[in-house]
Length: 70
Image 1: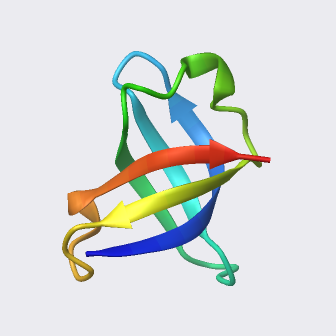
Image 2: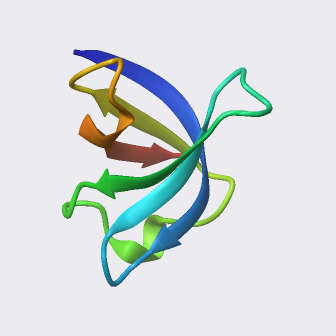
């Protein structure tokens, strides 16, 4: 398990899924990443910093956005 910083690029409040850009990467976007339901939808604003937990580093579908911060 690994935690990485990312920037929120888009958020789907119906499915609670997000597109994030990993910190330090200008080309890599991870799409359709699960978002923890404990995060209020109103906090999921584009360009906010996020903490993403990767349960399997080689499978981004096994990742979850666990936190947002300024």
